[in-house]
Image 1 (cartoon, helix red, strand yellow):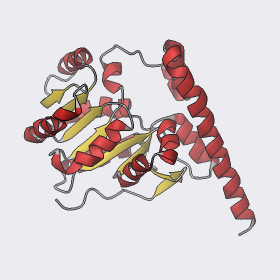
Image 2 (tube, helix red, strand yellow):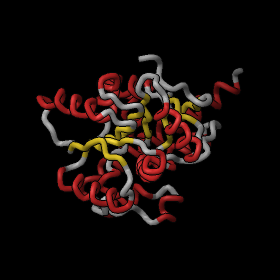
Image 3 (cartoon, rainbow, N blue to C red):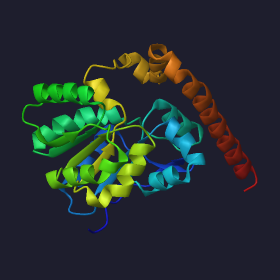
Image 4 (cartoon, rainbow, N blue to C red):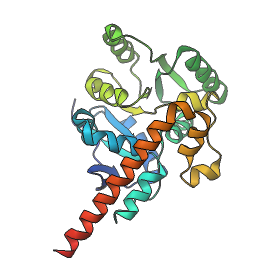
Length: 260
């Protein structure tokens, strides 16, 4: 394969991670171009605050983020951090919103999609929703995300045999990000997108925060209220670490400008 899709414009750096300064509409246009391309499979990574924190201590995830063909801001905290650091991102482009829009565009443009991830019962409900809302969407195939490492090769071959235009991967990070990068040239897809827990949301199993909370960047608070035992440690320490890293980067930038 030849090289993957080129970045549409210079990315801005947030905690040393290049994030593309694109709106949702621009990102969707890039995705459609990637699906029409005969180049190497393109990877779109949606980076949230947790990604940016984890890549500081996980060299493998860091390399995956740097190797992605497009990186979007999956959360208002990343957008706000970019603005504080003087490198403004126009808006957030989340995995669940991308999935929602691309299902409609996929139906409209005759794209073949493959769904990988979630528990079997969640995937079944998600597929039922997709068929009801997008009856003309071409489903290349699907597979739940609960398979042992011994079946890894079989999953790769199943996806490759289906020749999807878009592969949506709904598995936890950093596993999904590393898995997609490791197998990108063998999956037979034109575009690979990690969408986290989006299948659960669109299946109606995990309610999404109200629109006003989404706009205010408070989706994390909504999730914390719904699953406090599972998420309190992640948000308490993860968010604190993210804020600390952003403030250190801001101070370093100020000092650098003063001495230049």
